[in-house]
Length: 391
Image (tube, rainbow, N blue to C red):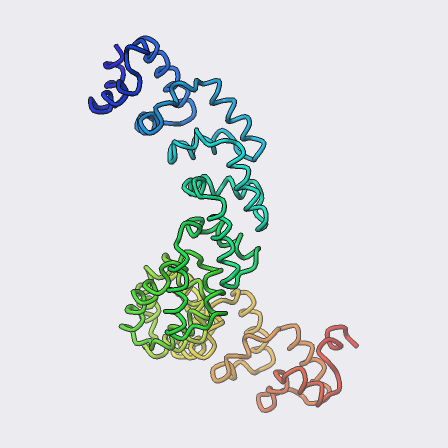
């Protein structure tokens, strides 16, 4: 009966031999083993452990059959004081069956180590669920790994942020980090650059150099220089995220199809790498929005090439600015000076109404509206803040 039951739920004959060796018939009756198996399998199934996972757990830690359901529930209850719930417990168990044998103090001590780095109990549990191997680390080794990030230059809050994103970093070898940093230094990244980039994309800290080298090729094939690429990464580390890098050729191609030349795209992306984070749809929509506002295609290409930050502006803000510039007859200026679209419209309106009584604004002196705050104050002895107040 026992063998039939075990075969029925997925154990192989080889697996059954292991079970029989662990529970020899001279010490355990077949009925007792069968009863324990059935009870435990039903209990695990109710907690979302399938047959394959159940087999893995019982073959890895056969003694779990001797614990009994009451003892397992008691263990779950005691761990709840550390922040674990039943789902957490079984999520770890299916990946790392030896968790059932861990004592309370061992787990608590690791949580205390994490708490010194601003991790909450819930944070620690999340880390254990994601990477159960951290549970078997020696406490001194765990401390050393966390201290390593401090030596590199991260503060404790940054360390927490990074580990919560990429918990596997705690398992990596110290030498690997320093090797990556040295290679990046040789490429032209300063230590501060590496800290900034690693904070945003921590998973790259262990395979940074290879990732950059592999992904450079798509950029280089398009015409970017290595210096262009390094500067873009420094400005916008998020472009190193895998989902962005994997689609970079599609993104560049979609911009090119709008009518931009390769060198114009390189200039735009080097100046404002955030373009590479936008979806293709957003880029295309922004292009056509500007066409709909009265610009020719060549004008839109020139405007976006000169002032690529406009890709990220809200359409209604741009529309309001263009409407006002049309109203005061300086719309034609936008073609040559698209940066006037990035100025705060309220400031420009206040300046316009103030200046219209002094230097009537026209296409010949429109630049007065766009003087720097200090130059505007020098010329008219009134600040933008005072204009906003209505003084």
